[in-house]
Picture (spheres, helix red, strand yellow):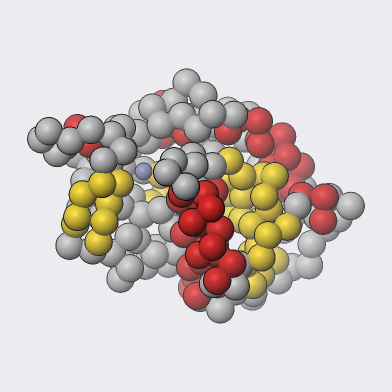
Length: 209
Ligand SMILES: [Zn+2]
């Protein structure tokens, strides 16, 4: 069902790097893409995010002597999980997944391009000070409600949904159009934080009726 023009779909990080065959592949993450494509037909405003790191990015374990992927370190802005090198600017790993078919999307937000700051959220980088500008863009477009889909539920989707709520937007996560990494209970923890922040969980069935 076509959604009203105060609503936007935010499609988080559906890239080669996070899907099977990618450098930070999330198992089964390509399986949500047909659902996302269908949801795309229901929204006039679609925003896509794209993780977009320099090769020497601070979130890469390879840039920290003696550290392994999935270790956590302390940075000036707080704890940071270290990842395998992924979504390096200009590489095939960073490209949007070829099955993603959202021809009417109007904006691609690239995030994580500052060498010393990671950015899970589409709104605010991990230092919690540096804005991506997305809240202003949505506000100027008259959007007050966002529906969030993509990868990974427990990191970039969760942080985006929480920041949307903090920005005063009605924030919904469409659960069957997301895929989680889910390590050490991260998915359960993310849902606790999302629900506590006023994020609502819905199914694609609620939109595709
Ligand atoms: Zn990243």
